[in-house]
Length: 154
Image 1: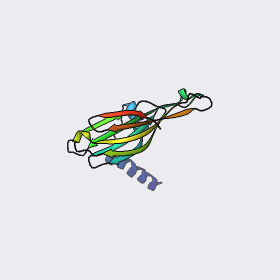
Image 2 (image 1 turned 45 degrees about the horizontal axis):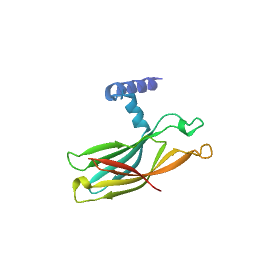
Image 3 (image 1 turned 120 degrees about the vertical axis):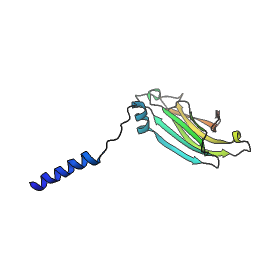
Image 4 (image 1 turned 90 degrees about the horizontal axis):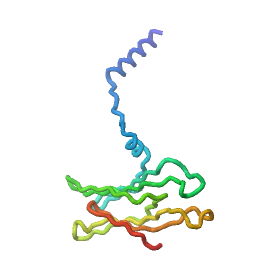
């Protein structure tokens, strides 16, 4: 019994004297984002650091493709400088984005260098209920100063 009391006293003293609680994030949207996001790709070139991140909306499909949750897909890009140029671009909201190909264009002009991405976007099929989804192909070019997206033929 005495050992138990001594052990409990040591435990409570150590908790009170040596432990410090951490600050809890109070922004619920930010907390949800950090808990739910997925890093889809990380990539570095000679000039840029790149990350593709996605976050799926809450919920589930309820009998039709239009009822399914969508994905927010973010493209973060940065230079390597001490005072780095940074940007985050968001693809249009979609039911799914699949990153199929990634390359880079190393042009001589600093603002002409790009990371080039090829995506497949999942969209509701015109043949529903025979098929739920159809695919569209997109090319995206980004650097920290500008971005472009265009639909391309498969």
